[in-house]
Image (cartoon, rainbow, N blue to C red):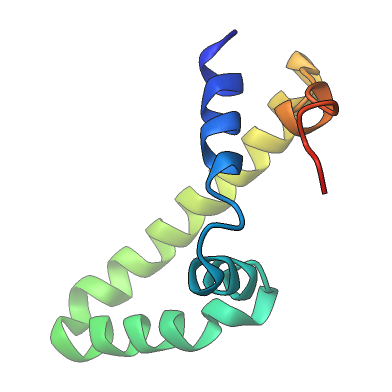
Length: 93
């Protein structure tokens, strides 16, 4: 069994053991969950060091955007099945 399959089984083995943890990660999966903490972090960055934020913000945004774009392009190059699709017999809902 490869490392990613082992990690997949270990993480999914934790599911259902704690209702609070399950609810936390379900909420974290929603798109709108991180807007407020992200906005607070940006405002704090601008407040604490305005020059660094004005120079570093666009660089950080470009780095994240470029990484996301390249990751999306590499996905088609490798075409590897995700563990959740390859291990359909191990997941019981």
